[in-house]
Amino acid sequence: MLKISLIFLVFIAFFVLTLKVVIIQMGRLTDKYIGEKHRAIEEIVNTGKVPKAWMGKLEKRISSVSKTQGRSEKVLKMKMQAKTSILKKIDHLINYSKKSPFVQDKETKEILLNKLLEARRLWEEKDWEEIIASPE
Image (cartoon, rainbow, N blue to C red; front, side, top):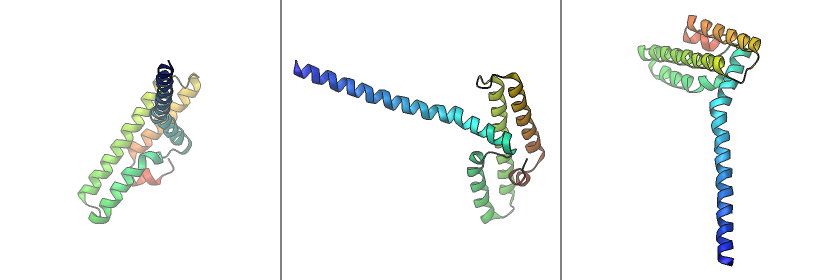
């Protein structure tokens, strides 16, 4: 009887720990897929700039190639790809904002979408250096 009780106790402890790990992982996934989007939207709406989280890898790659190759064709191509990448990301945010249940007020959603669309329009008109340097 004692052996069965210990096995049951170990099983319950294992189950509780596994459940705790799953809950922690779900929180991380939620933050990744929802939290990152909301932080990016907030940064764009407040500053008009490309979110820093989007810029890190792009700027590092471009600057490392620029140091070795100057203003080569490869660097120009990378800048065009970076611009295309951020335009795709803001398009995803615009679509997300249209469908998101997290903004329930119609006026707020409209203001948010207008600011995102305006930022996208401005970024589309500018070249890479203007996008990363400009306040809007």
